[in-house]
Length: 190
Image (cartoon, rainbow, N blue to C red):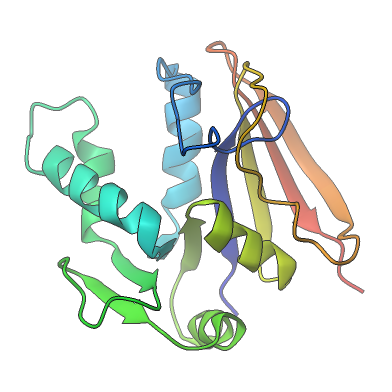
């Protein structure tokens, strides 16, 4: 069965965005070791799942990067653009992006159907609502939390909607020169 990985940026105190979606707290000057971490994380991925809100910025941004061979993030742009994407939405009727399909059904059923298909790993990117729903339903197989060296006073979180404890096992904690620490956890399965 395919794994669903979550890669998410967070502040030291657990916010993935400011109260209005602000991302101005993120560390952007990634060192080569962190870039390699992301390359290795996404190399065995052939499907990206996104919430509609994030997809509206994510997909066009990476398509523009992939269209510019002089962009220093060109190879990442190609990876994200060429990889099949599934956008979870209740409001869109047709996909508006290339290499993208829409998922409009039950989140758990849709994710489990994707996991049971032949293929490589799946990676999730998304805003607080989408990621919170994945976590609440116990659908994440690997957490890759990119802890930025910043704290903010308020914002959007991804663990607030849990209705029970989810026990996790720390697989690895990796500190990078740019100040980001990546915490890799996996759920404890009974």
